[in-house]
Image (cartoon, rainbow over all chains, first blue to last red; front, top):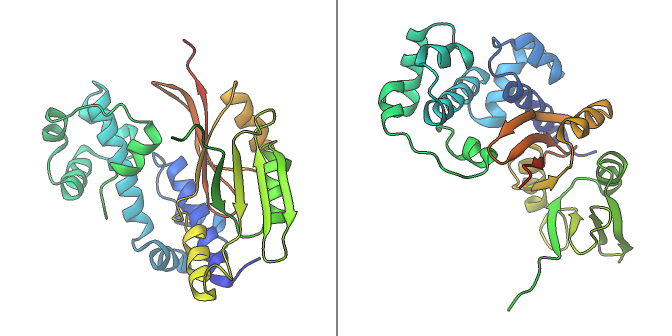
Length: 130
Length: 137
């Protein structure tokens, strides 16, 4: 079925879906490469060629998107949110969050407002751009 | 003015494989499967609800150039062609387990939301499908 590039796209999408499911786990390039049926060495390069960013960056944006959701919709502490979405330290979390969103988790929380949209839409459309 | 939505279209790469998935795994039923020569009109619906059909269409000539069709197929397999369905289930977790057992690929495990229990999956081509067990009352 289909051309080589379609086949590659589909396998990369499968690996990206695995990150979407298990975003709070550590990034395991070898496991993702197995899902995509490529070598670890090829994985990052092929993923970037397919989606325009590295798997690491995609996972960071995914985690930040979940953190934004938790900051908006819950009263969970910022430190707890940091670990819940998969960051290893509050320092890394704050730095990455600010770099991607443009303000700190605390400032983001102060301006929160719930959307009332289906969660899948909020997840897809509030995910910060790469 | 209008009174109903009867047909919605998504792109698939292979209509036989689409049948295996949408009918064989998701349990939808074939509403129409007609070979017109220039295209195969293939629609499915939720059992008991033939008033709302999904057209499983293959991108290609003569309605689009081979180059355009190639671009559509590439976007589809990247999960970016826009094909999206949301279905309703009476038991999200059970449906999830059943489909997992059939090898369906998931993007989200069943999760409690404000509106019910929600789940996300892919069809074999990259379309995004969700199903929700809506909150009662």
